[in-house]
Figure 1 (cartoon, helix red, strand yellow):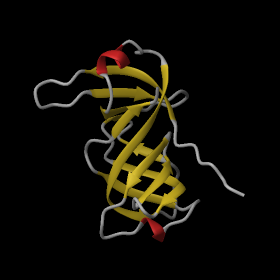
Figure 2 (cartoon, one colour):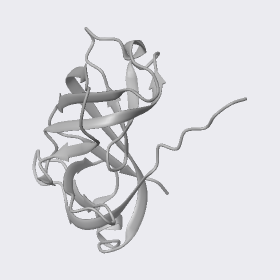
Figure 3 (cartoon, helix red, strand yellow):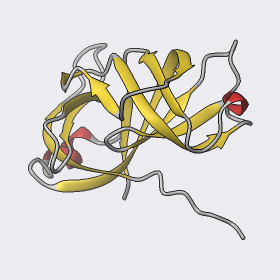
Length: 143
């Protein structure tokens, strides 16, 4: 039996900042029923997404772990609650050994690339991971 894992983040668009000079476009999203306001780099058309401020959209979230540890306590979270993510903790939903990445359940699903000295194959579905995330988590809206 094949199990399909949903990596779609369903978020509400709070703000879109277009690219300026060398600064990339950014997006601030919220998650219904949570206090989070997460700032991410936008991979997509800022003008098209700006028309959706206040609306729910689907997308994919990607980030890079600086170094991951298996957590023994606590739940899923993003720190800080408002702003660009620095520390995250989430449960593994899927492992992609070829890409050296894990899909984590934070307050939305997010693909996290593991740094090269570690192997995503070290973890399995259900494990809880904690790590500092590299600046610039990315959001790609789905059509």
